[in-house]
Image 1 (spheres, rainbow, N blue to C red):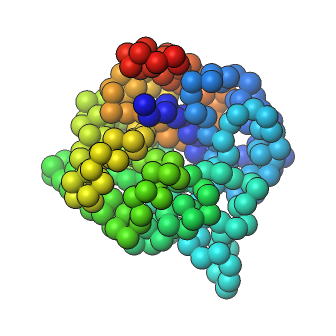
Image 2 (cartoon, helix red, strand yellow; image 1 turned 90 degrees about the vertical axis):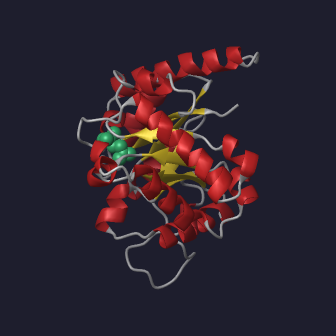
Image 3 (cartoon, rainbow, N blue to C red; image 1 turned 180 degrees about the vertical axis):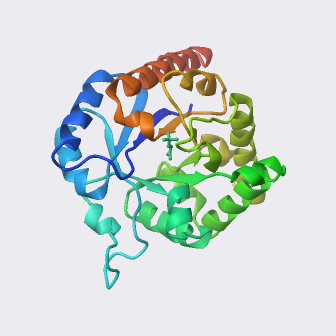
Amino acid sequence: MRPLIIAANWKMNTTPADAGELAATIAARTEEPTVTRVICPPYVCLAAVRDALVGKNVGVGAQNVHHELAGAYTGEVSASQLNGLATWVILGHSERRRDQFESDALIGKKLARAISSGLRPILCVGELLDERESGRAVEVVATQLRGALAGNDVDALIGGGFVIAYEPVWAIGTGRTASAADAAAMAEAIRAALAADLGWGKAADAVPVLYGGSVTSANIAEFLAEHSIDGGLVGGASLKPDEMAGMVASAAVVAKARAAAEGKPA
Ligand code: PGA
């Protein structure tokens, strides 16, 4: 059974002075053992968030990592520098693809580094609006997956808890979401691409696929009602404790229902 995951992407919000308190408030409002919770603050807030979350069973993630471990890379942060600060990392977010021109090949190198460094990666994929409207969404996402995953070892990725977030670019921060049916179809297409194109076979079933793009407490249940979707990567709403409480509560209901359907205790 795949875990239910609610991951908060705080993007370039919060400061070291206020991030710890926000993280602690969210942790206290979302205590649900059946849901994997992750908070990804800016680099400069990682220490404050880590300290605030000690003993709270909430993962801490970075929003990016460099593919080299050290060297002349001004402004970058390596996996070894994240050691002790983060155990998760978001990779290939569309804002980085757009603003930092990250390519699939570069994201693939970051993925390899994350896995070899013990950081659990959330690989973001998703199409632009014109790509969806011209019927090319699945092809675009499959190309992103092939580009980032070619050369990465399947067993290492699965063992490292590899997660994919499907985030249609046009739904991020816009208040507009994919329909639950379209998001579910994409999650299935993603696993089909892993299984067939990348030759992962049955291992593809183990990969959690999250939906991201204007997720809120009001709409998350529609996405989680789809069996192929295993949680959310949440931006704007993840900065609001009430929203996080609502989203994690919805995910807990689904986690229990899925466990019951499989005849397992939640
Ligand atoms: P949003 O961002 O929830 O604000 O749309 C999601 C993301 O970029 O991960």
